[in-house]
Length: 83
Image (cartoon, rainbow, N blue to C red; front, side):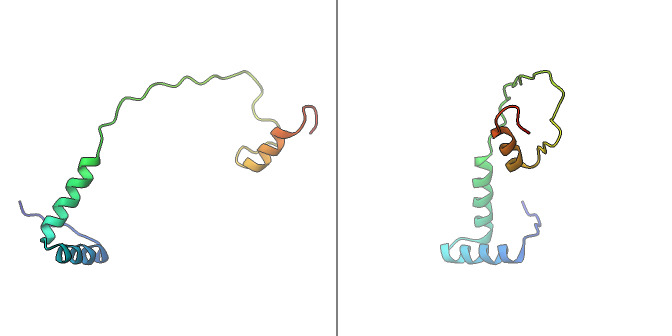
């Protein structure tokens, strides 16, 4: 089957060089590469449902930034009762 594909210029140069160095046609190199990528494809297995344990509370403490991991760790390492 004949088709047209668009490739990055540098990728095409590399593929042509590889084809020349290995004595293959550019078509054979592209076919081999596609076969390799497609053979690695795995079917998605259904994932097990994960049940997260939650506890009641009033949410995040004032002054705690969940996006600042260093500050969060420092807060968690403080002795209980200190601010």
